[in-house]
Structure formats: structure tokens, C-alpha cells
Length: 251
Image (tube, rainbow, N blue to C red; front, side, top):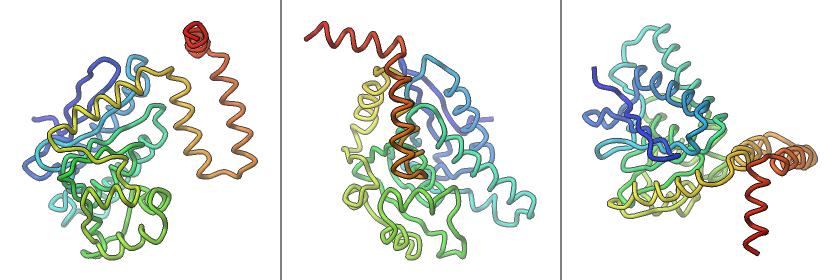
């Protein structure tokens, strides 16, 4: 059986590639399980600093595999949704940054998957849409939590309620895309960014990601408290002490 997700590492960067190009990388239960397993392995692998997620062929992902979902029993549907939710949770709380290299269509569940990544590098050929409401479905995978925090409530509601397709330029304009690059240079530019982040002291990177997520659910006062706590942890770590010593020596 062909792996629904391909996995490789280059130095301190791991790459997970959705691998069902014949169906635009539609997401089925096997793919969800493989992604969760990869994330769990990356979390405990000290050699890996960043995970890059992309798709094979002409799509990042067209979303959940409707053919699998159509006609599914209540138990089967619930299992699928549980896996989607577990994947979103695992990505959100992964102690390392996840960069989406969006190489084409990111639709429905594929759009949701991209949102769970921390950065989204987008090819100039990419297109985004949330067509769920057009077929009588509603958002899942923390879409209603994540999307308004990235592009604002009004824009998020518009995309969800209309199912409008937007291109890479519009995605960058509204803050959905971190940057737009030429299709032919997508993986090159993404790897360059990933290797740069992976070269930095790991604790500072991990705490930075964690602080952003915690701050989204916290008060101003509580944010000041945990930022101080994490900064103390970072400052006293051997890795940070070495980086500081190297910086002072260069000066």
C-alpha cells in the first residue's frame, strides 16, 4: 500500500508530503493517522527543529475525501471527525514550528490543515476556498477559532458563508499567506526559511510559539506573567547562554 504521507528529513528540517495526488490529496483516515504519527515522532526527535507540510501534484489538499464520507455510518463519521480534531490539536500544541508550503489548491479540510500551521508560504498558483456551507456542512478542526485570529472576524465569516475562492495575492493581502513565491521556487524558499529557524536555539523558538497560542486565550496581565517565566527559562538554558556568549564575543 502506498504511503498517504511521504516523510523525509534534511538536516534539522522534516518534510511531510501529502501523497494522494490522483485525488488532489483528499484527506482520508489513513492520511490523518499518518500525519498524527509523524507529528508525535517530530515532537520527541531532538534532531528536528521545524516541520514543513506540503502536497504532491497540483494541490496542497482538496479537503476531506467526500467519497469516503458520503454514506458513512454515524460511527464512521465520528471517527473521521475525531481524527481531524486530534490532528488539529497535535499541530497546535507541537513544540516546534510547522510551515505549510502551499503548492496549489487548499480547499475545505485542506484549508483547515493549512490554518493549523504556524506559517504559510504560498505559491503564486495557489487558491483557497471553504465550500463547506455550499454542500450543507459547517467548519471543523478549530476553523472558527483559528481563521478569525488570522484574518479577522468579518473576513473569516465572509469566506465561510460564501465559499468564495481567493488567489495567492488576496491571501497575502488579508494576512492568510505569510509570503507568496513563484511556484518553481516554493520548496527552495520554504526550506531556506525552515533551515534558518531550525538553526536557532530550540527553547526560544518553542516558547515563542507557545506564548503566541497562550496569549490568544489569556489576559494582558497573565501574558506578562508567563512571558517573564518563559524568558527566565530561556535565559538560563545552556543553549541560550552559549548563543549569548557568541554574540558578546563578536561585539
